[in-house]
Length: 387
Image (cartoon, rainbow, N blue to C red; front, side):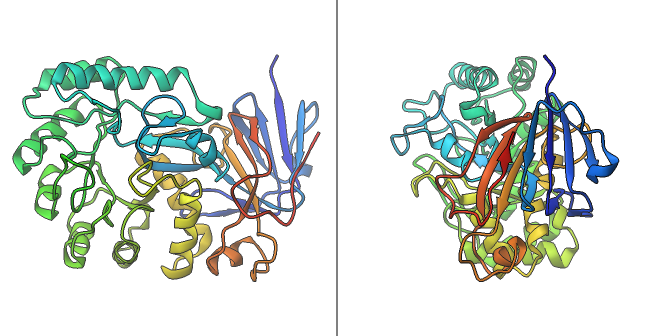
């Protein structure tokens, strides 16, 4: 039976679109798993709804996207011996995750046959299973020496569409990285490159020269994961390269502001995307994306509604995802939020501009309510009513 969801009495609708971050609308109509219409309730067909959500004048935004995670299998991370970490991210408003490599698997195979098998297995597993409904785009092989063009063709034909962080494996030289990234791109596989000092045993320093030569699609954790490059190199990467600028929670926060400032001065904020780079040695951060939005909005001199675009529409466009934007035809993935109780901000945007986290009251993925009042964020001032 086809479902019809109506989300009404929206006080603030964030679009995810950097060029029009706030929409003049108070209602969203969803048919099945797609957004059917966005506008004023009086102008839309809301009859026959199977579910109606009155959000009580609060904020609706696209579900947040974490552009940099390291999953293994299911909702378990051996890195921190923790279960249900993806479900916890859902309670932080994250509805989509992008793997930068399944590097924390104990005994991760580094031979070419094994690494390809692991990537295909991860891609299949997370395509078939969504922990708590979260969409995890996984199967991101960490490239190793000896791979040839046919290996990338094989991976693409098997459904693999991502490369794990270049530099986490044995390939660290500029020429070798450049060749393999080019092969990946030829077969439609998007690539991310490690930036900065080593993060785990086996990784190493990847500096601006290697990054510029490799020309990966995403400058992964440009603010370091964990150790950042010098400011001059970060600025040079922003100015010289035209690829995505990824800022992560588990990096150098001062360097994050250096990268943001460079992108802003270049007039290229559409390149900025956000990730957590977790699970990692520093732990699991269920509120990591919200914390990055609040940090960049409060210290980086960008409007809060723009900072939310970094975690939604920017990432969706760079990774060619069907979510991340509030517009007809897109996936019906949303997060409902309000200003936290007792924040100094008079509304959600002002509270985020002051550095406070919003309270998440509802997440929706593919038109289905996946979580209600968050167990992780501060409590929201108002919460939706579902009928």
